[in-house]
Image 1 (cartoon, rainbow, N blue to C red):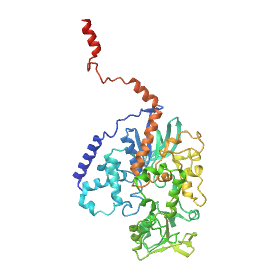
Image 2: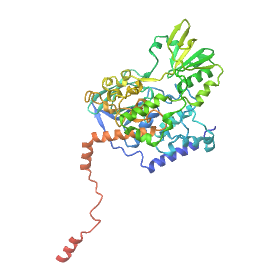
Image 3: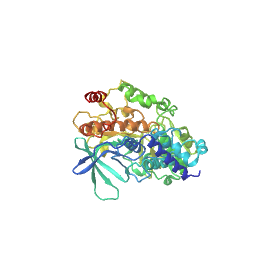
Image 4: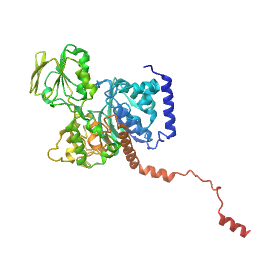
Length: 487
């Protein structure tokens, strides 16, 4: 395919015109706050990937423009798309509008057709992963979203009423800096409130023998090697396929279940009802929906599975949970109920866990952040560690306190990442409904900012004195009649 720069330029012009027709972005309206002579951001977003960009865009369109995002990665490498995501294409259907915020000219389809034409769009099956990153880079540019790359948030603490202090470090620069914000949004992805998970018995084994699927892996070094993959989800398939395509000698995939799941439950009932209604469910119904979904598990995409099974040296081991994992000289031995396998390297595609105390951004608040386990006791037989360790969030994705009043400022920190799913549904971790999630988040922040500044806004109301009428637009009939009679 040959890209057409002129087409993209025309699309950008159309997008800007569409925004002007809608009077977007709205005019700036949030009063500037100062701390020790330094300006305070209305919102700081931690993370400049897809969710971070959507959060910035939604805030900006609402007229909240004193905002910024910090991301550790270099520009163009935010999020998983060109780092540890290893699928060939996105798993979502190409037509989903994702982060477009209801603006046709902001969709991936519009971006693609502007460069390659409608005929190429019709030929396209699913969106290539690298191309999706290119689209997000354009999205950031065309909306002029403020992201500072190579900047890490080291801590977030309560500074004063309504103000949070963020300690940041800029890669390549000495020292640290403190910036202030009224709200902080954690747009930190799949592991946004914790870290990659591996079974405890794995952690004592030398790291030269294993990696988590979300880490950097030198697949070229696996050429000719005996590789194992633990797990059977989409990430497991993608990593297995990447190892096979890099020329590994053999690939053994160890699957805990006796069969692979076949049906993607939550996707099957996706609708605007789920998007808008899930957050309104009573807690027991939220739990019921997610417990059933997790229990059924999400199947890996058919394309990803075929990408693995098409290799003659790939072997699937079902009903094979890992019982032991030990180094043996220059090899490792992995044991399942079916036997012991000698391998050179193992990739654990075993997901992530929520561990608030492990997140530097939340260290000063972690002890008092409410989990679902603090607010809801599931019925016997429906217990689930993943769900119970989810944060119990408010209507704007804000954290809640276990003990009210013990951690001021906590409700100004928003969990706009995958662990928010039990409280809000799939609005902050996947492509399909991320615009809806961003709008819900931004409206909640806008509401809070206005309420906190109500005295200033009322003073502005009282002081406003621009006349609409000049006094010469009408005549008082009774007064003029009286003047005529007196004359």
